[in-house]
Image (cartoon, rainbow, N blue to C red; front, top):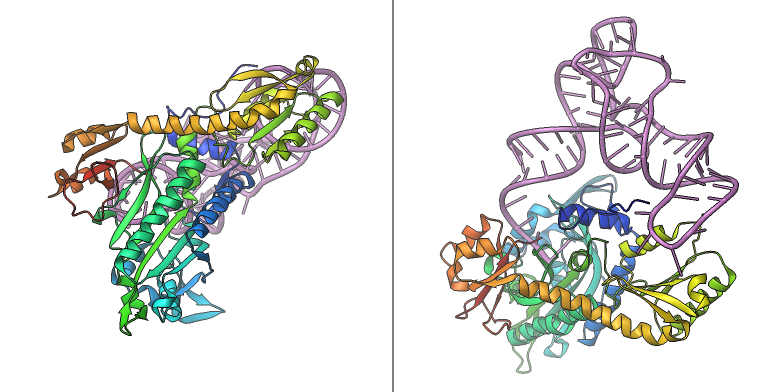
Length: 470
RNA sequence: CGGGAUGUGGCGCAGCUUGGCUAGCGCACCUGCUUUGGGAGCAGGGGGUCGUGAGUUCGAAUCUCACCAUCCCGACCA
């Protein structure tokens, strides 16, 4: 059988490669309405794993889940001037329902600051009610002109946290805490995607926020993807919705709020951060199947050995799948699992078993080794750990190698062809930012010299990290 | 919203210039047999309002007009 390419090469045409992976790995496909997506079982399995981990980390910070309505009165959006202005171009508005025109149109939530604001105002009375730490898992709709599956879709799934605090400092601390205790650890430890954190310049700030912090990751092609954000909303929403509390001293005070979210976009980031010419490469921590046991041919001894192994690994808490679909050829099944990015494939066949062995194939580096059946359970956990760290290290090396420290706009444009540029934020004042934008280059993050997250963009000697983005 | 292109089984396309037998091909799918250690082979089979509507014509996937939709390139966003 002539060896032919299963996928478009990621080096030749990365967007086409991405489409091919979505199709061949059965992750998702387009929905009937432009910009919507149908997430298929394998893709949704990845999202569920993300959800489980993020949810646990959020709860560990003290927040609790609620559910707010999908429909929001249009008047709510209008209460915060910048917020409406920012979102109105992408709102889906329901004007007719129940067979007649509505007195007041309702919008399909593009995000829920306003409705949380409305209810937080009711729920917060006393300083004893603060901080109020809420989160919800929901779908939101933002009418997108240029949709891309997972990365930018008209409807997407996310988690949005909304919190109210007594002081600006407390709100800022909590917003930063979400970044450092939930998002970055999740992305780096579970998704194996190294993250650059920083604040957004005013031009990239969330509509209605006084400060936006973000997690940026570098993809295979050197472009940036914003994987998560955390916003300080100041008192903008608290004033608009009258979120006030009575202090210890008996005075009426206005709250400070924050909001933060990660979405199904992370699935796209996962694909584009780790993929290679054979398809997806999933980090074991998030992979729906960590190990697939491939039964090479119909044979009682082989089937028995596969089942025994699966049970043994399953008892150790490893997510294992048996592929005994011997009606399909070996090569077909092997490549299918490779496209799906399963970290370890164990091939069990009569030839191996004669020697009391099986073959372990690593997806991350395409190596194979023969291992005694009795040693498999011992080796698999270590291998999974190695794969997890290899994926992280490779992505980290790429981010490092493709980030150039430079000092002029011309150099920034040059560096953005292949990755990111770090340059003094001062260089981008007085029109520099706009000039880069003309070349589709934006400021992804502002950081301090030591890489830490600044309090605001007015600190001196900040570094701007710029590049092309999704 | 401005510029370019395309609409033909699930997907990818040919056919259109020059109108004419039953609208083809690859992949996928179904059945059977042989296979099975890197996308298997052979044989048989199912699946189509040719984007929509009108017009020209004895006859339209093909020509004309209108409409609709989609995709690619320029201003926002998790």
